Image 1: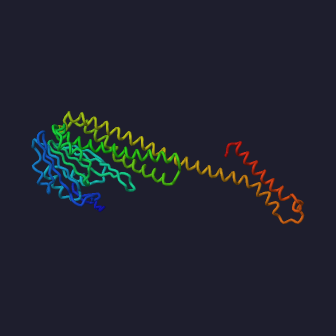
Image 2: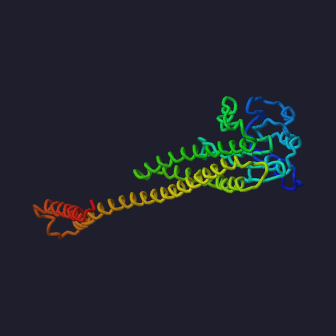
Image 3: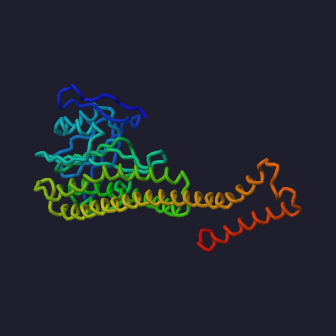
Length: 351
């Protein structure tokens, strides 16, 4: 993927600069206008086609997929009255999740997590949400299916979301992202269970690679998801006229979900560290078994080597050298010594 290496170092504050990877070739603008009776979903070619937005009875949701075309985000910010610092935060995809309250809107920045087939097990992208009285703007790095179930409910079902305000729509967007956390963690949990079964059977090198891969994934997940606890808690506590009491009931339930996500992440993190310790223990046990086997073999052959070395000396006067039964007697002594050690090892339960 292409990546912009530009930074805002040296630029004045409120300068909109995209920081992060370019994850889509074309920016997609989708507008949704709905109320309890009607809904209109359309793809727009320009931001100006989505307005007028504010001060209308219907709820407007504008979703933008792709952040590298800075002028689009900047134009939306000017038309909707979004603070330039918020626009700057939207374009910076490398910062931590956050929440800001302004006079006429609430800004939330949070991670969207999906599974990948690459070396890193999870992909973490940024989702920015701007919620006003009658509108919600969402900004994603690229198009995905995360919001597809919500769009389906809006279009085909006159559910609670069609009767509630913009605050409930913002809650629904955050909730569906948090629900996706559970799906990702469940899949990674299956991988942890699979590695756990393998590590108890063998200490193959690829198992250690899988453990490290999972550990990196859960560390990145925890770093991304942990701030969500404070963000949702702030949404519940904040006395803002933009968030009604009916929606706060659902936000409290969402807070419980975030707590559960963090608790599950902590549990799996402890399990993975435990798997690493089990792997090292199994590896040491296997090594000890090998050393034990080699030690027993060496112990058996030490007296045999001693006997053969004595009779391998080139002295002229060795009484047994010309004895008729000398060869067979020495072989018998060597065999008896080997059997004696084997019997001793069995009595001590070493073999």
